[in-house]
Amino acid sequence: MNITDLTVHELCEKLNNKELAITDITKAYVERIKEKEPQVEAFITTLTEEAIKQAEDIQNKKEKGELDGNLAGIPIGIKDNICTKGIKTTCASKILENFVSPYDATVMEKINAENLINLGKLNMDEFAMGTSTENSAFKITKNPWDLSKVPGGSSGGSAAAVAANMVPWALGSDTGGSIRLPASFCGVVGLKPTYGLVSRYGLVAYASSLDQIGVITKDVRDSAMLLGLIAGHDEKDSTSVDVPKKDYVNALTGSIKGLKIGVPKEFYGEGIDEEVKEALYKTIEKYKELGAEIEEFSLDIAKYSLAAYYVIVCAEASSNLGRFDGIRYTYRSPNATTLEEIFKKSRSEGFGAEVKRRIILGTYVLSSGYYDAYYKKAQKVRTMVINEFNKGFEKYDVILTPTSPTTAFGIGEKTKNPLEMYLADICTVSINVAGLPGISIPVGLDSKGLPIGMQLIGKKFDEETILNTAYAMEKEIKFREKFRPEFKGAK
Image (tube, rainbow, N blue to C red; front, side, top):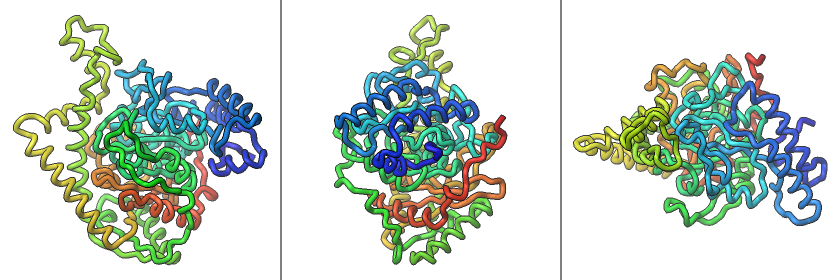
């Protein structure tokens, strides 16, 4: 039995049946990290020694009957923009290279309360700004399917670690597709919840009106389990919404007869790779066979969403990143001699090129004389996008699109053309702009052996419908049973 190949619900079953011990699971993952991390480079900080000690402690307490809970002793990986008390939280940036968080994010409090074991902090694009995890100040994470390809971003470390079986599941954050895109590129499941369902307290802010913590897992059932653990109202987050707690796992019936699925024709047009389209059309036919009602409709918002998104996201980034000034807990330039130089040189040396680019753009669109022309107009477009989705959901239960226009591209292929890189987000950003839930699941491979992702979009706080719709297709396609990452190019 290969322990690291099991899903979390399979691990829980074997723990309950006493086929495995907590220490067996943790040691298996520690060995897997030692084996695959040099190739994949998914971690910024590994906590392998601490994890083994924690596993032994939890195992002892369980044997004495001092611990309850099905998830006690299950390992997890955490994206490095989620605050973890006593552990570095770097956001993959030189400016926070030595920052040790003095507190836990709310999601970490929930994870710790269930006695999950943190295997480490995962690599990402610096401050979550990017589509490929090439913008990290520390390393470039590789795609386990082909080590010459990017894993997607910004939660590329989380997706690659799950795909490579170095963690059974992971937390990420999604501002414009940062969970769903790497999930698509790495052949795993990525869920971005409704804005406000999961507390953002302790998530280092990039764009506060768009950021959302979510989950990356091996299958849909695990996504439902982890969402159920981290969801819920939090008084420490003013954008957190108080909605009734749901059992997302019980919603996974697999029955979708009569479900109305809308297919927006604009998401299948120019710029979408032919193999991606073909895989999605096959999936649509399978949904018809399962009893779903499929209809094509017009949702002409993608290009407007992308433009509005980059105005809003850069404006909010400019504001949020103003706090990193070299004075308090951030990197301070050793070359600075005056207060003005501390600000200028610390930020110039501490931030990477993409972060600087977005700060400059954001400062520009918020500046006097340009606010109305850009930022205010982008917010009006945001309202239009929300209204268009509302119209669609008057008729359909779920909207089905590609997750990405292409499969994973090569490392270095798009770094010299930021605009081309930004277009990789075209299928995902509108969901964040509208605050809706979205899930990506793998539905096949292209001719190069790279995963193709399908995205399902749901109504606000209707995660159970998109989870069940994804679950029905997952059972039909059996992607995990047929395909495994090949680590092409491994030495």
